Image (cartoon, rainbow, N blue to C red; front, side, top):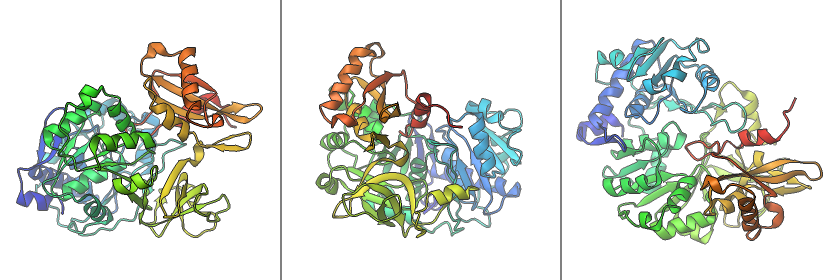
Length: 511
C-alpha cells in the first residue's frame, strides 16, 4: 500500500496524469524519483522527525516530493503558491524546515525569502536554477532509485489558509510506522468510497491543500491513477471525467456552482456515467446546489466534514442527506458536542460551537495560545475548528457558519452563510461574500460584496435586485442592507473565502 509496492506489480501504470499537458508519471517513476529524493534527504543529514517544506504549483513532481518526504519519516509542509514573501517566509521559518523546494515558475517569490529563513540548509529548484538554489534535477540524478534503509512513514504538517490572522501549523503525532501500515484515512476511504486499483481519481484543486494532497496519496496507495488539473475549469472538468473514465473525484461547493451555471448544452455534452463517487467538503454547500447536483449526477454525491487538524470526521451519503437536507453528516471518527460559550453542552436543535472529542490530538506548532483557544473552556480535551452548528435528534450535524463570521445586529445573531447561499445561485452573481459592517445604531448591519457575472451590470439596479431576491427567500433581518461590487473576491483556489480581507476594509483598525 505504497508506491514501491504498486510499482512492483504495475510499473508502467500511470500514477499521475496532468490534465493540461498530458504528462504521465508512472508508478515506477513515482517510486524511483521519490527514492532518489529520499536518499538526498538522508545525505543532507535529515532523519525521521526533521522537517522539509515545498511550494509548488500543480506540478508533475508535486506528489513525488510529497512521497519522498513521507517515506523518509519527515514532517512535510506543502505551501500555498498564492502567498506573498512575508507569509511564505513566516511558514518556512515557523515550521523549522531544513530543506525548501520550489520551482522555476515561482522563483521570484521563492528567492525573496532567503534572508528571512536562515534555518534552511538546502534549497532546491525544479525546472531551473535561481540564486541560492541548487538544481533539483542535478541534485537527485546521482542518488539511488532504491528505498532508503530506514524507510518509515512521515506525516504532513499543513498550515491553515490564514482567513484570520497568521496561519497556524497543525502538527500531528509522527508515527514512524512501516510503509505498509494503513492509517485511519486509508481505511476510511476504503470503507466509504470503495476505490480499487482500477479507480481513476480526479483532483481539480491545488495539491497543497489538505484534502487534495491526502486523498491523492491515499488513492495512489491503492494503485489508482490520479488525474491532476493544473487549474480548475468547469467544462474542462466534465470533459476529463469522460476522457479518463473517472470513477472518483473531490470538489468544493464553489466548483459545483460554476458547473451548474454552465449552459445546459455544455452540461449535457459529456458522458459522466463512469463517476461512482463525487466527494465534497471544505465549505458549506447550499442545499439547492446539492439538490441540483444530485438531480444531475445521480446518487453519487458524498460529503464529509473534517479539518486540517484531523480531530474528527463526519460523513453523509446521498440517501441520508436527502432525508436530512443540509447536514454535513454524523461522526465516524470522534464524537460531536455542541456547546454554549461557557462550554455547557446544548440539546438537539440549539446552536453553539461544534467540538470534537475522542479523536486524534493535535497542537498548533509553536503556539500554545492558539492550541488552548481551540479547546473547550471546561478542560475536557475537546477541540473545535471554530464552526457554529447544531445536531438533530438522530445526531446529524448542521453547520450554521464560522464563529468568527457571526453578525450581531441589535442583539440578534445573524449567520451570513444563509444569505451567501441564497445569493450564490442568482444568475447574475459570479461570487459573493456576506459579513457585518459597523452600524451606529444596531452595532452591525449586513453587507454583501458581489462579483457580478457581467461586470457592466454592477450598479444600483443590480443592488436593488439582489436585495429583493434575498428578502423574498429569507427573513429580512438576515438580508444585506447594501451591496458593493468587486471585479474579484479574495477566494482561495480550494474555495475558502478570505473574508477577513474584505471585512478589514470596512472596520476601523484595532489598536
